[in-house]
Image 1 (cartoon, rainbow, N blue to C red):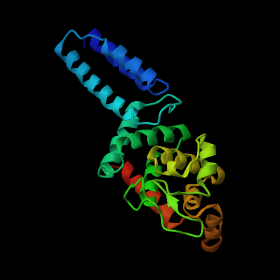
Image 2 (tube, rainbow, N blue to C red):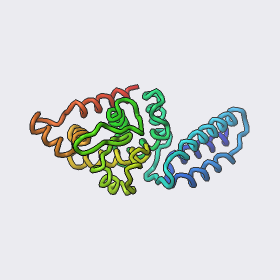
Image 3 (cartoon, helix red, strand yellow):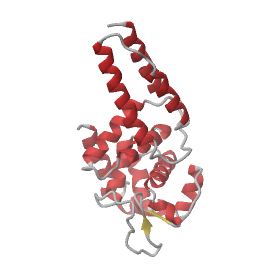
Image 4 (spheres, rainbow, N blue to C red):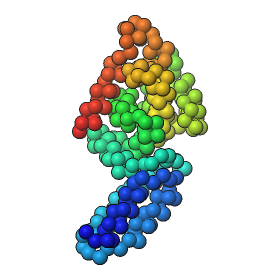
Length: 235
């Protein structure tokens, strides 16, 4: 294995663990790798594959919210693999840039992205329709990919450090960020996914009423999401 190929491999490993603000640091790092030269056919082929990899990743990054900040040591390879898995599992309905953002947000909050993905699947009735409006209830309608209602959206947006407008609930990137933030809040509050997921579905007071009536928080909603997340993980 020659020196130029080893140099390029080391650069790739470095990039996977880099922390940066999307847009600038990524492009600068890509340009560094693009300047590497190869002295044999094997290294040349590897550089071509690497360039194609970066172009594909850059395309998905450019679809993410402007000024979206990545924190922590990001494993980009794992994030891309997650995005590809969710895209395939949803038959192309869950867009790759949604999956990339979900992987990044889940990593920030130490939550399984598959758990959030299955929640979004159930919430939208297997459609992943970001324009979905739920049926009317006494609390109003639920909106978008994560099916937030107007009595919940504003304070979750505040926790996420995001502005709030009802129309933003139809933005899948925004909805994903809110759903991860809300799940993180609920899990921190209850310390159990049955409680957290049932509270997401029924509201916190509704979850407490469910537990009082049934003796435990393991609703069909919580059980299905966790079982389907395990199924998706095993693919």
